[in-house]
Length: 114
Length: 112
Image 1: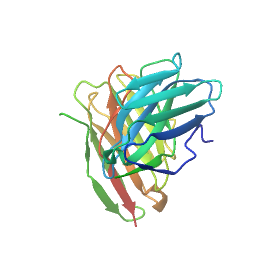
Image 2 (image 1 turned 90 degrees about the vertical axis):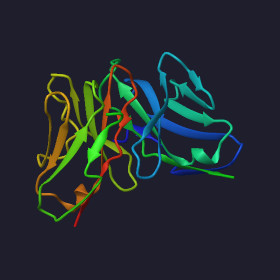
Image 3 (image 1 turned 60 degrees about the vertical axis):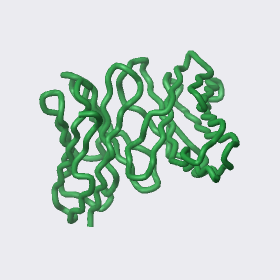
Image 4 (image 1 turned 120 degrees about the vertical axis):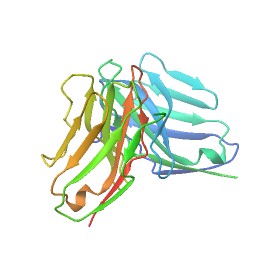
């Protein structure tokens, strides 16, 4: 049962344009959502997060949008840079606590072309 | 240390042998997690330690898998009688009272 799904295995974008990565979830108990970025041979690194009480969170070039009714979140990167090329995972947590397991999507490979 | 340290970085083992994977979390991080990433898959939760509480073992795929955390710090994930389907990257993460984990670089396990 895939509770967090990233339906696009890959995305290719031109440098300077917007990258939009999408994520859908099925568990209505999820109340906190995160995006991680992963380079080859490295562990994932935390990028940005959003609580279910918000619908948008911005951090520099990165913005995460949450649509609770659609159980959908997206990560926007503007402008995209070649260094953004990596695998992006969305993740979700249930339970309203600061700890506990995260449920991850399968990841989307983003390639930003110069 | 400055980050989460995992050892070994790579491990090749023969089917049926036992392996131990080690994780040194960030000092002071009370929560420690193990995940694995099989080829082409997302991160699969295995086990979670929080302070002195009983660990959440709900993600361990079989009784061949076990993990310990000694002294609230270092953790060892043990896989007994390894099978080829155990081949994956095993990732450890630690955290404090916030929502973002810090991951190690992982151990790439190959069972031949």
